Length: 398
Image (tube, rainbow, N blue to C red; front, side, top):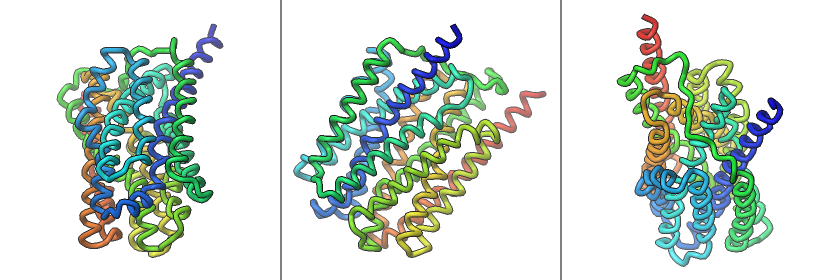
């Protein structure tokens, strides 16, 4: 009996990891092509920033409807439908004839990106509950593996001379096969919407819980803005400053994602051993070191190294914050995860056009100082979160 239960748990974990993998590979397969899109439509840095910001704009505009969508048809079907539109819209981008069409497609992609994100994280916290220990970094690690695969095959396709359209259709069919496999395997494997509560925090702490939730939301917004830096600007940065071939310009993104997989692979063990706050602090300081390396040391090799440090440092912050939010008492679990994934897009909406404007006014290298400042603000937020928890635990012991 125990063997059957353990096997069922393991199957849920594998299937859900596959879902995270799909989520990672979709957008990642587009990123190395951004310099080509920029050149094809003669876009400024600001226009690139606005184009990419269409993704979080769509998520912010309609992302909160994911809760209603899940409630109306159930988590299983909501996940299936959201993922189908998610991979279809991103695959249509190579066939757009203007910057406006691409921006519209990315807006629609952003809507379903938010919906799939909510579905994934709700299920991830449920599976984590079954195991009774931290698993969130492993799930997000599977997503990072997807981003590596997407970025790597895109770079390879560019190197072998494939067109963006040919590549996109290939990736679409690959994602559809994986999604169909998920739909078949997970059909009778729905999980109830249940979440664990921290044993060492009292359920009666409504005011402190709300305060912790607000801090965590702000932390998520900054984290997503910083985390997406390498995916948006890495390739353009390499082109602007080092005039490297397209195959090389995609390496900062790939290095960042490989580092994220490494960080998330060890993230749960480090969290279980040292606690989430020390891991969060170490992560953001490492990311700050990475962006400082990119800005200060004028070398393509060190730039790639810097972006990899950003990925390694930021790898644990988003999943740990989502996990933390899922454990705050007295706030409806589904609502808070939905709103958290929604608010996380604010950073993605603000950072790209901000950096784009500053890059057009000064230089891209100077504009990246914004990310360094963001890292320092995240460090302060983590300290505030830690101090609030300490006060709560101290008062709870009295």
